[in-house]
Amino acid sequence: MQKLTGRCLCEAIEYQITGELGPIFNCHCSKCRRWHGAAFRTRATIRSSQFQWLKGEEYLSRYHSSENTVKNFCSICGSSLISTYDESPDKIGIPLGGLDQRPNNTVEGHFFVGSKSPWFEIDDDLPQYDDYPGSHDKVRETAE
Ligand SMILES: [Zn+2]
Ligand SMILES: [Zn+2]
Image (cartoon, rainbow, N blue to C red; front, top):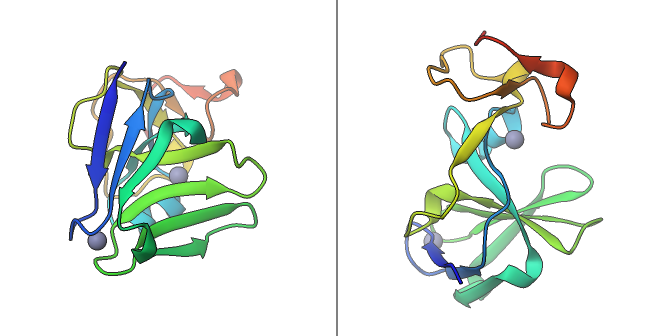
């Protein structure tokens, strides 16, 4: 079974993921861009039971970015770690930037392209969605 590890910038916090990641997407929403200080956030959803803190859990800080979503980050170095959801405690959102290894699956597409950064051009052929994938009528044929 796949085992992945990850850590924050200062390495005070380490975590482990067991099993397959859910579909991987680049999220271009303004919250992800701000949280990561980047053009987009590459992320996947996993089950909470797949995730384990290995060390440093006491250094976590939490911020409610919306009513249901909590961003968990390192209080020492500020690294973005995981998203947890008040209404779905069985799920965790994981950004791939902190991983030490290559997961078995690869990026499937771009979502929230409707709010992507104006200075960033998507130049791959992956599918693009205006918001969350699943609304098939909103698939875009070309990049904005
Ligand atoms: Zn840290
Ligand atoms: Zn996002």
